Length: 476
Ligand SMILES: *[C@@H]1O[C@H](CO)[C@@H](O)[C@H](O)[C@H]1NC(C)=O
Ligand SMILES: CC(=O)N[C@H]1CO[C@H](CO)[C@@H](O)[C@@H]1O
Image (cartoon, rainbow, N blue to C red):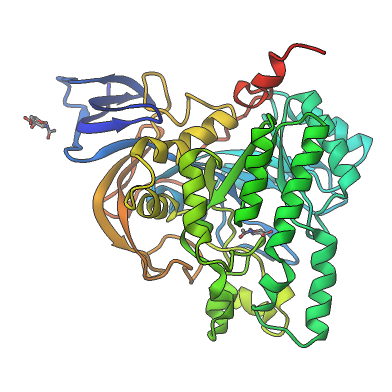
């Protein structure tokens, strides 16, 4: 039987690092042992001396091919997942999100249609709830059945056409607990942002510097605290997406310490960049960084967010995005509120976190694996199928060179966009070989994978990593 044998590397899981060989057959890891010998010419042997063998990254937060205000983000399910594989990420969780007035099951079906024939790695979905009714509540329940495979829903507290009001959010949270789904929230103060944008435009502020001014950090912290408080009232586990500022992170930690199940996600951009870029003279550079909530203008924030990931007050990392070409960004040339929101990260996340986390001495390689892969697999209930190197797990793994460096550049990346916000950064930690579902898909700087190679991963509700405290709590 054909297969792969990776020899002489160090296998890193979130709880151990051991020198071991890994045998892969039929898309699965079939053995992990100190020494494995196979006498079969059909099995290809790969040398991993001085390299780490890590579980493929899982990015729990992408918006590929997102239709937004009449345009579509430029990385689709094909280019986006190719870029992911080139950077060592082998699974994504994308958001099926459409504006108010649409139905969750229709949106789920639409995303499956877009993704299934195009994804190059496995993917799961979170469905966004952008309005509230009995019909929507019933559809949420339906979506948690195995044939749909949804175990999380996202709520926006900002963006006029996506946001739910607090009382709708509260109803949604109560429904999530009932059906065993994790609630995910974009925590910002929507009505304030709308008012502030108007105010800034009237005062003649039209450039990208208006963006962070319309989204003050304190309001992200306020909304994060409010979201956690409402979730605690509803006794619903909560996942805060893209925690961008120190005080938002403190709100997550505060509620966690009070005993509520709250997860905080940091995104790669917030760990590598700060918001001083919005004040760049070069419009294109400044506009490229527009995303919400914005990057923090405090230059110490990226380090602090990494420290919080290291000590467990934040839990995992994603990218959130959603890349646009420079031409698409130009829609907002005379009005910053029209700059499409979002930036790249899928290809560079793993290296950026190695560089700023492990290379800087803040994370050990096991914690790196936890925050780039295993924690996501646990929270979304696909562990140890994903996020672990062990017998029986999917053969999604990366031969990682911890010493090698590369320079990030749009001229070399595999994204669909013509701009890279991390342009020129040198990062330690490079995905030498990416193996997805038992197949070598990235090697020697080349991708070799077919459109549609990835599969949809149904995610089941009532995950113990999310609902365990509620399930076993003594009933009052
Ligand atoms: C693994 O290491 C052993 C001992 O150092 C060596 O003999 C062998 O050739 C190496 N295997 C590969 C595939 O490089
Ligand atoms: C942090 C970030 O970049 N968020 C953006 C990701 O893309 C979506 C869709 O454009 C935006 O809504 C987010 O603001």
